Length: 318
Image (cartoon, rainbow, N blue to C red; front, side, top):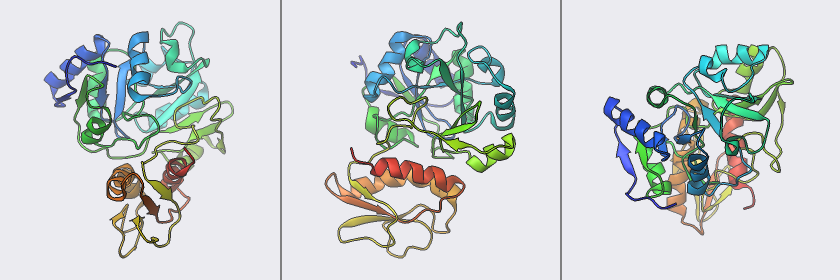
């Protein structure tokens, strides 16, 4: 995609949000901070803007996008909510939960957003800058992670500029993302976990009073984050490494003397989730494109399930 100007870095104040909203209305792309990761936003009703998202990211067109809205009331205009969907939205919105719901026929979304599915993925972000931009724009924003497709997700404005600088209109700099993992994605009737993420599956199950089956079909994904290879650094990645091999850059978790980087020296999964993508980027720089990264074992519980999901996809054959 050709841009007339270099990507602008915009302050997260009222004037900056007004500028960003004007760019979005003109069909341009703007990266915005959320509590999970930075998203690459475009008008979800504008075919050309949505196509530019795919072009900027180099994203497969069969992979759906998440629609971001400021509140549940506006979400009702785009999707049909079952009682379970209402329960989850009331409990966890705004926050790091995406619901895949039946698409309303009169929703007015670009068909590129849903990738031909009769469902739509919707999220209400909690980040005040995302909320401010959604309200300044006054419509639905399609916003996958603001990085080249399949690469490490961005949790800082500098990450966005490193991957997409010169290919998008602007980045609203809201500082580091607090959660650091993409949203958990749930489909309902019956309840299924399509992607583990920033909201632990245990909390979702407790709210529903039901078990979440795990579902993933890379051939026809219902939501983002279901491709087999995703979130990948340039260097190779070895998981469950109790110690590094010669030449490896070791990312620790918990007490790991000698680790080049550590997601959480105290073994805190919340801290680890927030640090994951930044640590992968730092390790990738240290290792180089032909190098190797090793990462210490992460417990398969709570946010550890989401961290391990990202790491398995990052380590998958490319």
